Length: 438
Ligand SMILES: Cc1ncc(COP(=O)(O)O)c(C=O)c1O
Image (cartoon, rainbow, N blue to C red; front, side, top):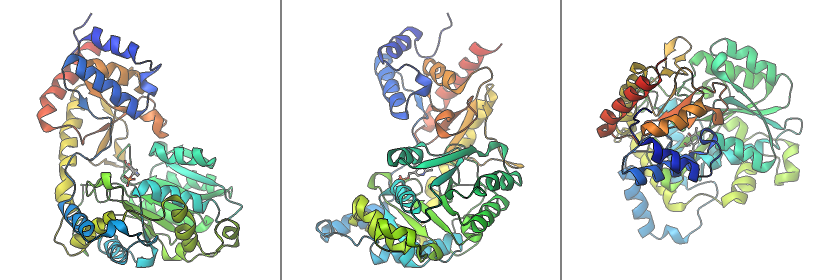
């Protein structure tokens, strides 16, 4: 038997005691638990790449503004459901400064994380046109958004975009939208888990089809500005964060504070709804929301039902962060660019040791280095690889839970890996490769 970096027998025993029938199919939280148990039993630190959580401190501007607002007693007061005026104003300016798009403050609504923004959008869009009852996921994607559909009993369809990049995207999407049952299509850009970024040509295709078939585009910008191949971080100056909003007037953009401002714990983001959609009128909404207007329906129908708005103090935090960005006194990119630099080093360690990057290009360019990357090893399915990795002190999640058809792949997240662990990672991958070479 080969000597693995983490003692084989101990890992075996903990896996069998865990009662998890297939490690490869386990949820992120289950994998985390298993890894914690192995670390405790072996007194060895894992290179943890399974959780997509920020690895740097929260934006100090946000923390200071939030504390100040709490001292001013906002905790005692219900915030307006559609958001405090300052946040709405700064959100609208942020959209202008960083994407060069015009969305009025009224159409910028804070939500309890983008997670809730997505949920509120699905719930409302589902009722906008009674002929259209299905969401299209341009996958791979964020698994919870499908879970949100399941808990509602709502319909969705998906396809893996891997084979349909560039011009090929048009025919694929059109073949689905032309059936007439899709109310919205969702993707994240940069993409969780694959870190692919749509090109302008692809965004244009999505935008044009959205107009042609009256389908709302839900653009999840959880990793706003984090395609580090370009610098989108100077307010009011190109290049801007690419967005479908340049190509359609029927969209909702989700801007999360969790990753770019490391504000995940406070659960705040905004949905920036195109003014056209916000003011859209449909009699099909009336039975559910008592109003034919989309904007009123999503705010006073859905967001009210879900949470009656978003934490008052967190809104002050995000307003202050956006304001500092808008005024050019705070550059979010400086805070998060280390993720990209770490990814570059880590990806090389993997590829030097026999691994492949699964989603490796944006049409004709190598993908960016950022928060996530995807890997595979010849001869292993993703599920097998996750389990095998446990003996080498490395953890990740399987792409198969993300709607990806690349079942050989894993998603690796760089955020929690400290640079001091790089020698360990390199050693472990080398051992893995030595042990598995055919
Ligand atoms: C693509 C995507 N959307 C949404 C979210 C959740 O964002 P929030 O923390 O704002 O709810 C995440 C977080 O990992 C994500 O990766």
